[in-house]
Length: 412
Ligand SMILES: [Zn+2]
Image (cartoon, rainbow, N blue to C red; front, side):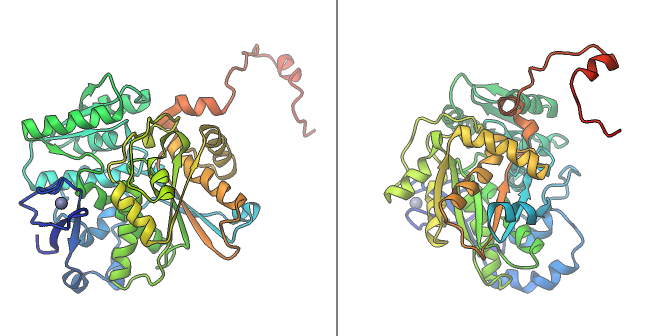
């Protein structure tokens, strides 16, 4: 693949060809990052090419993705999700400009569709017959969706805490589901071992560098939707760290190609009960495992698999990391729904909870623009959403007299 220079180990720097490894460094086991030939890419991809492109989905940026073909993929639209500018809410919070990138509008309701799309395209290029993943739901749901109509068997390892709606999606798309009596980390390790033993293509986040590349397209879209500039601050929910590192790479790509000049500051928001990256950032150490426990299942990880690049993104962007409690997440879900109409799952509302905290701390300057990424739709974890509201109302008899007793507002 000409546009790819190499797959470079983030730890020891060793360069690999695409034939040598698709996952991790064959010397030290470190994660790989895909390096591109930007001079070559610049010859066929620039601002003008994008302006004329009326293909409004993530594949409009295929020149900056590590695959050539994607025509076999199902017709569902991945990417080009709305970026809302919310002036009233910004004013209420006391900030200058607020944007919300609603990733719940992807086909399976989460940002993970972007990573899965690239991983599936890559698996097809390699002629894989089986693709596998470990996930608490979103990443696997998207993989099951995008392979549903293909001749590519999909084997999914799910941890015990997988919310039922996410599980139902997997079965609906026809994936082979293996429910593990254990955590996400247990599912991840078993998936890795099985894919090595049986030769399956492994999409697992923080292990497969191709998936990370798909997340870049969310950053590309934010820039394009803001008329070719990046916001001052971008808030991303962080579990494994792949969305954070992927989006930072997207902004970096656009900067290298001269499409944007100013780079954003990346802000990692974690759940208090799963804050390995925030801890490492504050203590200036490598990430170490925690015992993860949070309502936000999508970002509930003991050991973050993409910590190195996530921490590098914070370093390079002069970023920040913070955490929010489950209580703050539940409040944020309700507030976000009522103030914007966006129904976010817990990990989606984490960024809004983080934004409120930063405002309280005075960490956002008056003239700064802020974009928060809402990574997943609230219908994907309805059990968690039910904790934010009271649905215990007793039934009323279907008569107007009963309604009278409720003392509702009368307009005449
Ligand atoms: Zn290495």
